[in-house]
Image 1 (cartoon, helix red, strand yellow):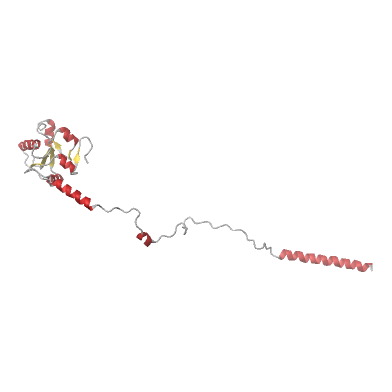
Image 2 (cartoon, helix red, strand yellow; image 1 turned 30 degrees about the vertical axis):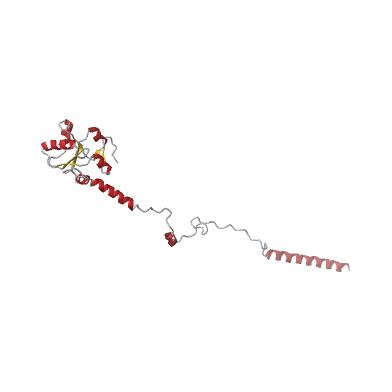
Length: 213
C-alpha cells in the first residue's frame, strides 16, 4: 500500500513538471503585445522652402495684375506744363529794340557756338554771366586783361554782346564799336539783359564757383 502512494506522488511531480515546462515554452514563443498604446512618433519637420498655404496662400498672377497699384504714379499736370511753355515762349520771344537779337535768337546762336561778350561791371559778371561769356568793356578793352580776352575770339567769328538789355544798353554798343575797329564784322547785341537770360533757365556761370540755377 505504501508503495502505491509513493508511485502516485512521483507521477504527480512528473505531471506538474510537464505542465510547467509547456507553460514556459508558450510564454517564450508568444509575441509581446503592449495593447492599444503605440510608440510615440516625432512630428515631421517643416520645410522652410515650402510656403504655408494658410499664412502664405498662393498668389494668382491675374489677380495681381488686376489689383490696383499701392503707389500709383500721379499723372502729369498738362495744364501746368502748357502754362510753363507759354511763359517760356513769352520770355524767349519778348520784343527787343530794332536790330537787336531776341532771347531765342541769342540762345540759338549760343547753341551754334557763337562767342558771347559781357559788357557789364566786373562784380556783376563775377556774380553770374552767360555760360562761356568773356568779360570785355570799353574800360577794360585796352588793358592787358581785355587784350587777352580779345585774343581768344577769332576776328571772323560771330559775337553776341550783352549787358542790361534795352535801348539803354550803351555798354554793349561801345564794346561793339571798339570790336569793329579791330576788324570784327559779325557782331550783334542781345536785346534783353542777363537777368532775362537767367530767368528763362538758360545756361549760366559765375566766377564764385556757384552756377546760377
